[in-house]
Image (cartoon, rainbow, N blue to C red; front, side, top):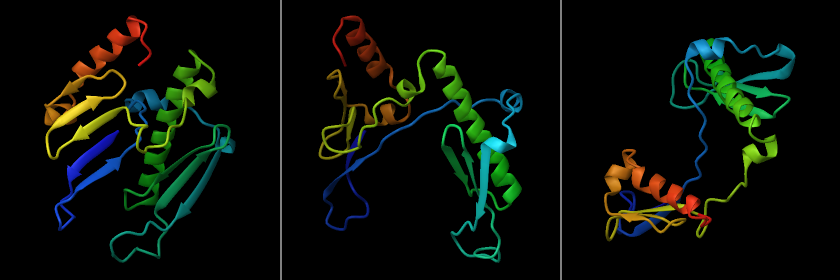
Length: 175
């Protein structure tokens, strides 16, 4: 994704371009996650100092947690909470969510296809452009679909792009 806007941090009011790569995975209910049992021997758990804004515990107490699932190499780091136990629980939940997503996808394809092609977020690689200045426009570069309703798209109204993508797939054009 490519974002073009007048940056509020640029005193000269120049247009600036930013890129973002997006990875998604499902958020599952706690009851679905509790059913999953990951053997301790498959986990490498490390703790570290969280850092961030001051406070009595900064640089003294290791509250941040990093969990690595050895068989898959997936690593999750959590430092959002102030306690190590809370961070460990959150990291373990996120790891389980990712493992569930992988397990579901493996039913359809092997692990290499799950990862897909890793594309660098840079000029010419984006699938969608979001332009805020000097005009407002969102354009899907795969299908050529455009809309001037930038805020609606940012709020989640992606129907125009999904429909266009599906139409081009059905018609045999490779988006």
